[in-house]
Structure formats: structure tokens, C-alpha cells
Length: 366
Image (cartoon, rainbow, N blue to C red; front, top):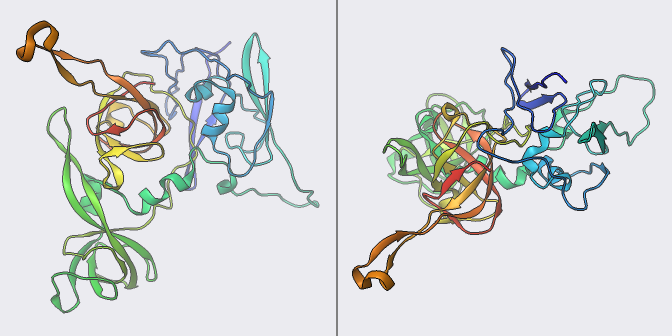
């Protein structure tokens, strides 16, 4: 069997992945120019295991996500590329729509999922088109929509490029709902709603002390009443006073939510540098930032494990109050899926949590 290829194609503003047949536990070699999914082979002994009670056929329904469906068939959902087979005769075979049927079969003793394009409506003779945004997403957009419009963590790049408050009308030091803000670097059209964020403490890479980003605190909402340089933004909602230098963000419309969950093909050793929404600890469906990005091989869709850092305790049995210091082992805390990647920092959604997750906890391969 020839080595499979996993190609990633960008359609419009969505990041979509075209997959070819993948042999279980076989390495993936990307041809020149391919933006390939790299299936986790390094530093792992994972093999495909079907989930207990898995279906042989599954009809996709509205509201499904690729992660949920992966979990119906696999013990480890991030090994989805290992069993996915795309029928090239199917239109947009790399996307899955409500009404489609996924069929589990066996080929040469290995499990394989095939797609049967579903139809729920009869069409008269005419050209049929299907909107890409009707395809199921990898993660629930609701779980990260708040973060996209109100980012609790901002990168160094965002701080340098986002619109910022230059001044308030009549030179007030602070502004609240009903007041006007003068904003520079605005690229949003008149009538656009923007979140206003106050820049907080810097986020520091524990590896080398480099500044990677900043905490951000929600100030309120504004509406662009006139464009220009500066633009005028009227505050429509305020949770705290707006100050000079506060940043403004529009909800991301080009968020790539069509990608395949997969594990990195190289070792990952990172740490949590912040928990979004100003929380001290993170649980399921919360967003965290960690100190690894595209330069470290991190991609949207990567599934990673999170480990609580073990405490250091004193062995008083052996040496009394001044006894030997003992490092307790790290403990598995949960899994995250990467949904946004910067150069040296990435954002992940906690998709499962057995323990609370906090700053400086470890990010590793699943």
C-alpha cells in the first residue's frame, strides 16, 4: 500500500482538510507544498482502538461536532485520521454535513470509516450548491465564541495591531456607556460592534522570561458611529471605565473551525501561561494559553494532554522538620484541543478535565 497523504486546503475563510486513505500506525509523508496533517507517531505507543459500544453506522445530525463523532468510534478521538477514508466521488469529501452517514467497515483487518453523502430533500433538475458553513465544525463554536469576541488573553502581535482608544470626547480621563471614544487603527465599518479590552499583566514564557502576550480585562461594548483616523466609537455597555490605550476587537469571522483532531508528530513540552476570563484555574470548556506555537510545530487541531505540576514536600519521617525535599509526580489533569496558533503562543479549549488546570501546569503529547 502506498503511503497516504493528508492535505489541507483553505476554502474561503474556513480551513478545511482533504484526507486520503490512512493506514493504521503508518507514518505520513507530506509531498512538497502540502500542508499535511502530521499523525502522532513520535513519542507515543498509541494504536487505534474502537470505542466500546461503537456504532457500525452513524447518521450525522445538526449540532454534532467532529470531536463528538470521533469519540463515538474511537477510544482516542485524536486518532481519527487513522481510520478516515475519503471517497473522491463525493463532493467536498473532506467536509461532513448533517444527514451524511458514516459507515464503519474493515479493510485488510483494519477499521475504516467511509462517508455516504446524505440527502434529506428532493431537488428538481438544477444546480445544487451546499454552503460550507453548513458542515459540522470540529469544536462547538459556542464554547469559544465568547473568547473570540472578548479575548481574555492577547498576543504581542494583537497588542501592536488592534485598534486602541486615543482619547475620549471633551478629554475625559475615563469613559462609560453613552460616551464617545476616539479610536485609531480602526478597520471596522460604521455600525460595527466592538469589544473594548483593558491590557493587563504581561504573560511571560517560563522557559526564558520572554514576553509572549498580555492578560486582557473586559471593559464593555462600543459601536462604530463614524470611520476615519481617528474613528468615533460610542460606548453602548460598560463594566468598567474605558481608558486611553484600551484595545478594541471584533469577533473573528475567519476563524478556522474545519480541521481534523490529531496529535503532534514531535515531542511537546510546554506550560500553561494563563487562563482566559481572568480565572485562576480552568475546567472543561475553558480556554488556556500555553508557551508553544507555530515555530514549535503546533497546529490548529492538535490534541494535547495537560498535567498538574507535582508539589514538593518534606520527608519528615526520614529527617524531621528539616527532612529531605521530595518532588511528587505530575498528575494527569485533562486534554485540550488547539484552536488558535501564534508564533510562540497558542490557545486551546479544555475538552476534558479530571482536575483543575492552572498556570505553569505542563502541556504534553496525548
